Image (cartoon, rainbow, N blue to C red; front, side, top):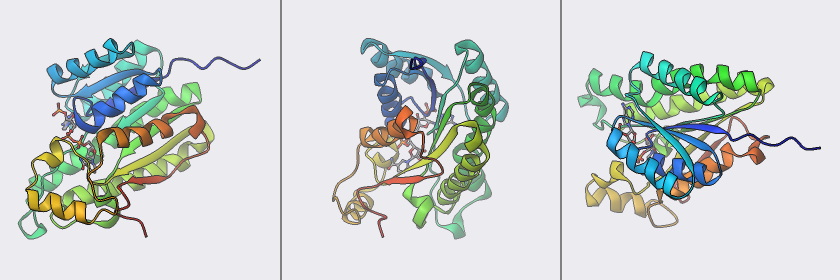
Length: 249
Ligand code: NAP
């Protein structure tokens, strides 16, 4: 007799818009209960409504993930309230771009705190409930900037490269516990983050992309859904660039 698969509980940070919202909607379509996290409670409620209206399961927690104690409490509270935590997607991220000669300590530290330290804290806290169930999926959202570097993004590229090291280390530490950890590294994706860029920068990025277009949030969500799936049980410590071919070699 095969064992029934329980309703998996997934926590997605940065789920109020953009890639995170698409990830949350996609995981909900797979039948997961999705916990949506970001600072903007009103935007989170809109994404939650879209999931509930489509017949999915979701709840929201407003939280500033740059606050270590708040992240620990959030993850603990979710695991307690839901009775389990199976999937963690560290997606929230910010940019504070600038050339290195002019980059301030504050610009560097803020990006490391939001894009890297928060993921470390969320992983550390989420691993305990995952270990209890001997099942877990961690998916960290990196960037092609973290793989090949990007002028004007030494802070962001450092944080995203750090996520790769963090993820591979977790993959090795947790393999025996049936917990996988992988990175999805988006290329140039159409969201608020890239919407503010000058047209010239957008044109340059599209020209550097073999598929000659920006990607969509849904195309990133598809890769995350795979890593989060039951079928991805033999895939860990991997970095999947979803970038229209931008970083292939
Ligand atoms: P976005 O549209 O700017 O959305 C960022 C998300 O992160 C929002 O939901 C935001 O919610 C949340 N967030 C930011 N700071 C937070 C904080 N301190 N606490 C809690 N939540 C916070 O960005 P996106 O384009 O969807 O990017 C999502 C991820 O993909 C990021 O990690 C980004 O680095 C990565 N990525 C994006 C691209 C791209 O081309 N768009 C390329 C490579 C990698 P609130 O403002 O409501 O808090």
